[in-house]
Image 1 (cartoon, rainbow, N blue to C red):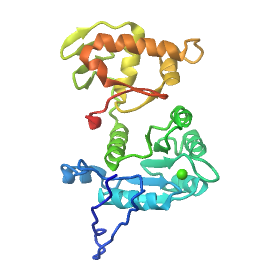
Image 2: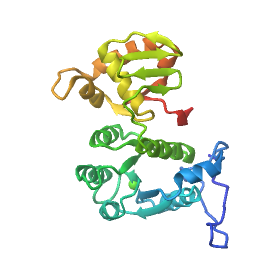
Image 3: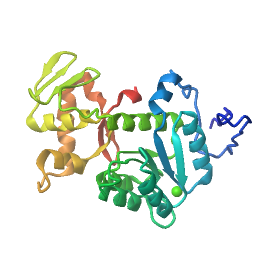
Image 4: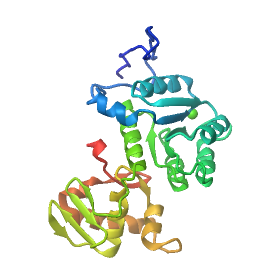
Length: 274
Ligand code: CA
């Protein structure tokens, strides 16, 4: 596994800061972690607050160092209780929330933040270990925005954070939505792929519209069913899979933009993931 090699001083401190990463550490940089257009990214990120709730101190240090280098304001807490209090006080834009925490776990923190109007709009990215699909499903259904699974690369994490911030900017427009070759017009009930009209059933249309409204956002099968049929419908998760198969086929090559997230649900690929 490649090791974190780049060390740079904290800005304004005037002395070097070296980050030691043990070889077993699961975060790593890769050759793609060269920030293209740093000036643009940093101006976009300037002043955005990120709160990390994570009990692994080495991971907190690594994330803090790299996020601050990107221009974010970073705060951190090591327990659920402390993090919840900090989130209520600081109102961060984005919360990186470890699920497995001693004491109050991440799902509980998520539930409490989403339940309160004062904190419901904090974007939450869950940080989970492999094999925690049921936790991910529960977290998404509680209102978490996204998740990353350990081990993750910083590049992936930054892309998720940017996607979440972009959604906060109001990318959720009722007008026609254009995502790569796919155009969805919810007013005229029209879909085109590379300009070619595609005929969908009302259910397929509603699923596609749900997914393209929030590219990169993973929806559980339950969430998709509720969106399409309302709360009390007897449709099964399997029926969502069947709808997705039909939808992908009708979208042709663009059908691959609808990604299956195994054990969790579906999402429309975000431009950041290209
Ligand atoms: Ca943990």
